Amino acid sequence: MEEKKETEGISIQDILRVIKKNIILILSIFASAILLGIIYTFVIVTPVYKSQATIFVLSSSYYAHYYDSDSSDSSESIRFTLSVANIIKGDALLEPVYEKFVQANPNLNWSYQTFASKISTSVPDDTFIIHIICTDTNATRAKDIANMVADQVVLEGKSETGLLKFLNDGYVEKSDSAKKGTQVSPNVTLYIVASAFAGLVLAMVVVFIKEFASTKFKTKEEIETLGLPIVGTIHYDKRMKQDNPTMWLLDFHDSEFDYYDRLFTNVRYSSVDNPSKVIMITSTVSKELKTCVAANLASCIGKDDKKVCLIDLDIRNPKLHEIYGITFEDGLADYFENVINKNKLIKHTFENVDVITVGEDIPNPSLFLSSEKLKTLINELKEEYDYILIDTPPVLEFNDALVASTVVDGVLYNIAIDQTRKRDVYEGIKMLKNVNAPIIGINVTKSNYQNKNSYFMKDEEDKRHPKDKILRYAKTLKNSISEPTSEKSAEDVIKEESSKPQTTMKTLEKIQPEEEMVEEEVIYVDEDGNEIVEDDSEYDEVEYIEEEIEEDTEE
Image (cartoon, rainbow, N blue to C red):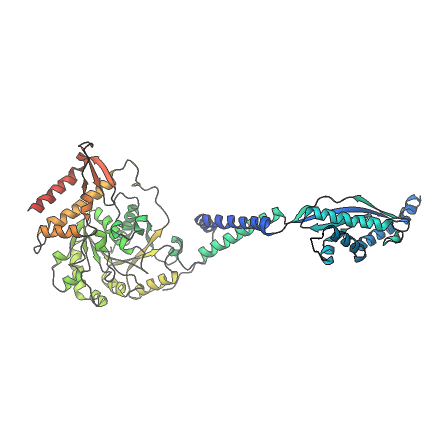
């Protein structure tokens, strides 16, 4: 099968969808980056302070030009100013200052190079001003060093034999003393803004790599690139996460059951001229809800007053008997060995849904699935039922699904969102097409979309849900007791049913009311173990069924 390539680029809708889907991840990375920036700025990095003193330099020649009516040329004083700035950074002027500083701060143990590296000068253009700048990790110390250097320059300027004797009759004056240093590093605003920007960029890179460079299908739109129609989308209900298969079967009034209504409608009308009556349900790998889909789709078909037979051909990992709370014995293996007849093979459950289990271990499943007897059985069932659903193993795990696909009218292929690798899905569909399997379409499972506008959304006033569950399981138990086989008595059947670990007897259990309770109230327990308080009159049908069960037991 040729893989359909996406020819269009990433749209704005795709970007917004990705951002909305991963908003928590984006905000987490963004906040973490800002937090790291704050920690780095205020904890890790040592702050640096700057303080500066200002001196004013004039040469004797400047006076002559200034008071001369013909000229006021100041170029010589500017040259002198630049010369003084260079002298300030020299060792001859700084060494005496360093000695004074060491005497005043004996505990610092600074070298002369360390001291000199903290001092710099700045001369504004076309001025006689020199800024003596000191940077240090201590604001007060920066101020003291700048003032000490400025004082030394003034002292040298006043001395006739000092370093600034070339000024002749000029002079050097300290115009501004240094003040307590101001912080110049780190720049808090810049660091925080940079951290936030870096966090946002990192978050977007991580999210887009996660979404667009993923090897798994993330959305329905990506699955559409397979070139097969999407006939259903199943929300990942929390009950499907449980290890107890009896919880996988949804009630008709569950909001999630609407998804199966849509799935059945799409499958039903996928081919009007040649409708699929025998439908195989499979997937690429395990845990893509294929068995759960098969059971609930069967319930949906039965609710539509159609007779449906659900066959468990997942021979190595059968689950349907656990979902319906029936025995896996008396199954296909026993039927093919002529141990039981077809009437005993078919197990009646409820709502027009019958189930055929695997039975005892089958040594060669592939040979079993390709046998003429299985084809004959399916053809016979087609005359008795409106639909036949077949649950098979995943395509890539065993060859069974490929063999079974040759005896069905259509294949419903399940793909779980954000679970199955794309190359595995491509390979699974290719294998089915190689055996000319009639693929109806794709059923997307574990979707994160939730149908909040469902007609059957539950509310506090809807009491039908637990009641219907009781009626459903009461009818199931009644059928299993009221129709005993010729080989077992009703009493034996009751003992078997009550010995099962997940028996439906629990759903009919009544908790004896206490003395102070009103006689008209009875506490019922549904299949989830929740207590349901209703008036006796609302449960006439349940009590009627229980009476019939008691009568059958007495007989």
